[in-house]
Length: 560
Image (cartoon, rainbow, N blue to C red):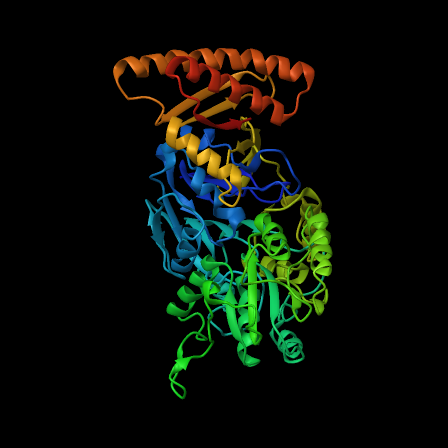
């Protein structure tokens, strides 16, 4: 019997983020990740980009599940935007990952908890998770087996021999699953292949360095971290503990994650010390933090797309219990991310303006927990692939990966660099062809938001209370600029009787038709997105005011 395997990326190739890969084995679909990419510079009204779901919706009956090995926002944030047709799809991940994801994703998800090296069976296709090491604990790779063929998926993975639960991995045990005579397709993230030539381990360890710096500081220490680098935050907490300092998390989500890690026995610093009968690390809730608290490490963390704005709020003294002064030391532990360089420079400028006592940045010799060139070579030797498809990076990184792996003697022709929408097909793990799947667009999610910290929000809340709110969304073909679909939802604008509903439907149809004409003019005159959104908002407000004598709050979502 012939076994067919296909691979298609809906996102995550030649881009940072929006990771979503479709693996088809004998007509069964396994989705790897469903992420978001965030704009690194200001794009008016753009919250993020999600994968095109048209292919998945059309083939929903063949989908066996979504598999998330590493709980990085690039892999899971799109779950909040799963279309209705896919909401019942199971998400297979570790217990820790499920908890971490639940801190950020509001939608109800059907989690199926997988365990290390415990095989799952999908009508003869066997899926085995195996533990890998990266910045998030209990991350998994997956091996999909059908007879004498394997597809191996691995996210960023560092080769190390550490035994601690937060860092241990079972990559060497893969040889017990993959047999010598089998053919293997490797789907691998390429990590930091373009910036690091050696092994990542042990150059990711910052705990001792931080402790030395903490010991030299007499007053309060404020540490900036990315929320998706749990290992690095854990190093900060350990350094604080060894320096006899209290710890305060500004981000309650991260505090919850660390408590969960302690519950799962991945760490033990929140256990009760039998000698003192107190928790090993003294935690100060952020609500209880006082400016006069000096022997404390305050951890300011967020995901990269929100991190710099949070630091800016701290620098602008938006938190009354965290006012920077000349006695503070600011420690910056984040790596520089492509596209965020200006925000990072602005951050340092803001810190300097506050005249803190000292600014500390980590030496560039310290690496993030991501695959370097030697890690990737070692993994290739373990997995013994027939073909390799690099994923989750830019074309430049794919090219560097190809050069790196070719140095091991691997045939460069069997390293296939694809782009989103290119579907590669194999029969009995022999390459057959590549065909193009038309992706409708990258979806731009433009959402009206309410900032509860300013006077505008008070006005908006009054409007919603008195006149209700109209949610309007438009799906537009970015090539033809025609409206592909429109949807309206009214809350509190009118009583839901048949006559009012019919009146609302008539208004909505008119608005959609008029917006089509507005769109044509906007394209011809090259108006800004703000001007376009303002035009349609005014149109909706006028139409509903004429019909119901109310001026509702209008929230627009435009997707291209």
